[in-house]
Amino acid sequence: MHRSGVGHKRHDIVRQVIEGEETVRDFASYVPIGNAVEKLETWEKRGAKILYLSSHRSPADVEKDKIVLRQHGFPHGEVFFRQEGEEYEDVADRIKPDILVEDDCESIGGEREMTYPRMRPESRAEIKSITVREFGGIDHLPGDPGKLLQLSSQR
Image: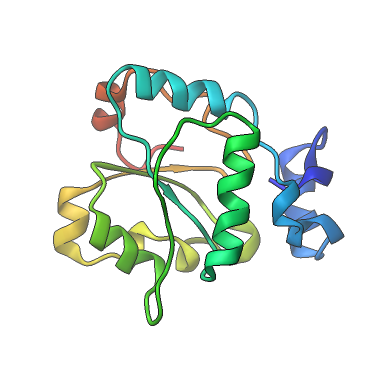
């Protein structure tokens, strides 16, 4: 999340985004939410391959995402992004993760901005979706990737 969200309640952070708070667009200064790094490390140690989906389209902005991931110690994983003419669902269809963990996009329009609901039905049948509240973090998700597979559209 943007750095000015640190220390604020989730609904206040959502409001900051909606109101266009200055650091929302300072992608190079983003910080992890809660214990996200530790959670992803746990999943990786238990056999999960971690992939990231960037909101950016330009390689220069995606590079900022990679720098933020490294700075905060996130597990190594390829960072995917939308190519010319692609939307998020096209990227997910292309990479076909076993599990797609995404937030509910509350601050930018909700479900209509999410990846999973817009994917092709055949892809949705193959990929498990876990939806978390925007800026709510992933700390509450199980540490065992096998248990993640048992969840579907959890909040």
